[in-house]
Image 1: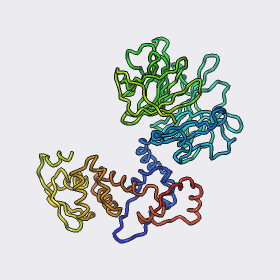
Image 2: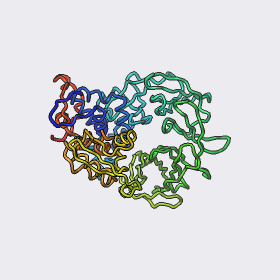
Image 3: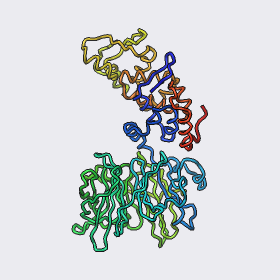
Length: 363
Length: 154
């Protein structure tokens, strides 16, 4: 890196300069591409990217569909990202729509050019999105909200099958992002395929030994995990696919769980978590402290619903803070079709103790 | 952590000699936090005075103080006392002496001070020459206009 020398000035080796810059937010690093040629190429240097990622893992964001017009929620929405601190700092309903720190994917593109179906998943800050191209085909694309870059669209493999389950993850051993697709045929067969970013092609994988209950798998540390029902053992298990060996294992849920309603798995606080409804009055969250170890499940929270009589409430936990005292979840109400975000600042982790209803703020 | 260090069983003292000749007597366990010094000791066991040619006395004093007192609270307040020039020289010292905790603390502190400042400011702070052509720079600024929104005044 060229320098203009002044007497008594500190001359940093490049490695030290990298270390300083790796603490900066992405937006600023992109601005600093103007400094000189060395800075310009930083964001493409894999070593720097890894350094930066290791530091920025602690900054979480939510990616949400934002319906501009609630009457036309199916047709008109944008994908936005919000930083968690920003979400938690919100006081009034209007504030969030106006301020800067969120970014809408579709605004940079022609309105007709891309119709987003759903967010498949996120990994290391990269989002995988399923969309419909202008030629009416299903395709995947990858979006980095921090650098505001979007990949090309990759066609989903041609199939007459009903493909509705996609999961997104990262294979640590080959350092590749992968998308796993599950197709259920009417005849009862199922197919599993994997797409590797880089190769940009689809390959077959061995079929699932068990059929997942849910839409999308949860990515955790190089594995993708689905909840599945084991018909022989009559219990729920977690079906786990190792992205590097491309083999499946079963993980057991907490011991002693009776029939559970509304089960789901999510990633919270950097661990795989299992959630379920308890007697229609409470929402329970378990966390697997050590991956694959049944004894390491602990009950994190047992939260009372504020249920409206006759309505089915679905809660989806989205984020748990590092120290475990802030939980953000979305509540989807079948009748009203609105999504609320609540944060529970005072929640106390409990083992068997009930917790009173949390006060929420909607935004 | 600070208490542990001062009451360590090893009472052997070592002398560190800064680039401007200033001498510092430190306990062995303090000196060992500087991996460069540790390597020196490993090589020549009987040494009593170790030259530190790249670091001025005033900075070595600060570094030694840091090692003795470092904890979360101390680290949070530490960087506030120094101007940018001193921070940079301290970072070079920490890098040379190979003290990872101090190095990280200083990198973070310097990053915090330049965060959201303009490219011109950053060039000035680190004495970096702009090797972009005017056209290249203009192109970058246009392409990434969004990244320049909300920049602090220099």
